[in-house]
Length: 217
Image 1 (tube, rainbow, N blue to C red):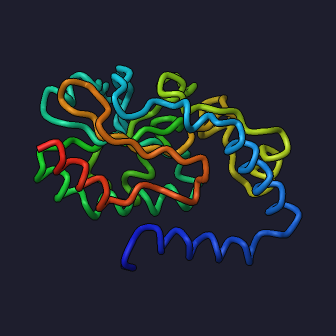
Image 2: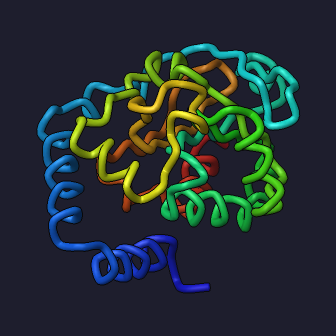
């Protein structure tokens, strides 16, 4: 394991830049610039906001509600794009590696994506995740947090060419994805720390999440 999640993510990004044809990479970079320029990340739920409530099915079909999680302690809530995204898989794997440290601080970790439960179950089993992976089909929860956006048509076509069957894995909502984000929510339901970045190759460092939990104490 490298010194940080960021280092691992950079390595995957550099590898992808070598493998993806220039034309397609330019379209992906264009979409990233447009999303960043929209200012949506700055308008998303942030520190000091009350975390929008949710009740979503887990990979095994059980309903998980934010209120129930908060009854047990602070919550670390992470939004990811899907199991087809290598950056998401790295970020979830890093959170799993720090799961013991998170729970030792009394926190509950939960991940949310627009994937259908079967896809979440496959991911949870593959990565041996010990925390709930919830399905936000239709992205209602991501919308509530201000994170949901629609892929531009030209990028959706690129993803189709890559073989990402988002129509299937997202339950008929192929164009809508969340901006990757991570929140630390205190037991009162207030967001006390937030990471929201329109660049999907950047994710919250587990060490920063742990520090935010320490600040709650």
